[in-house]
Image (tube, rainbow, N blue to C red; front, top):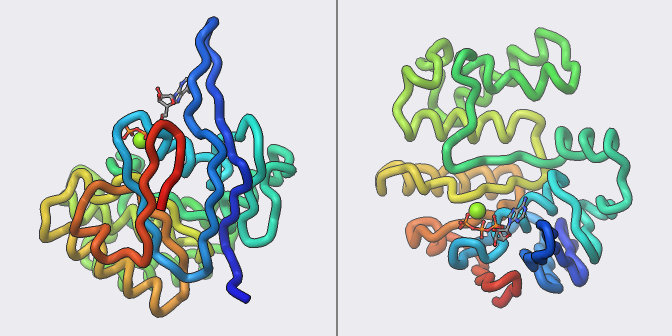
Length: 225
Ligand SMILES: Nc1ncnc2c1ncn2[C@@H]1O[C@H](COP(=O)(O)OP(=O)(O)OP(=O)(O)O)[C@@H](O)[C@H]1O
Ligand SMILES: [Mg+2]
């Protein structure tokens, strides 16, 4: 039997604003087996970010169920879901979302501070991660002292800090040139192969989707293979 890292059952999200209802997700049933690289594409406003946010426990569904690593996250309380996010999920965003006043090292270290890891453990882990993403020489640079591709590599390292089972990426190469987009996917594939991490990537970039195990399309909140 294939083990699924993510399962959604009739997942729906309806945003209500004044008297208008916006159906962002409409009965989404998705199964993601462990250690796969899955891509999702679809037009603007089709529900891609909403889906990632709900799977990552940032947002709550209106109806339906989401299981991540055999835990029904729709039943978790606020503090449990915060812990779940910290331990199980890595987020990578289009614009990196690095803290501008922190160095590359400190940005990667942050999730370890939040999960109360001792200093020696943190230093070892951050230095290993800098090595993995090839950024050892830039450890003490602030984000604005790094190129776009380098910032993205720091953002990947930060997403990996707590060794998450699932990595969610929202247009991770949207801000990168093709050379850096290829380098990004190479790193994703390496991590996937070596550490068996599962990637769910929202992308329109053919350089990314051609490397995925499976591609889904989403349109008006409906998911299709
Ligand atoms: N907090 C919110 N309140 C009300 N409506 C929202 C909210 N967030 C998103 N929406 C609406 O839900 C729909 C899906 O939004 P979502 O951000 O998931 O789209 P997307 O596929 O990620 O689009 P893009 O490619 O532009 O990032 C859109 O119609 C959007 O306007
Ligand atoms: Mg989006």
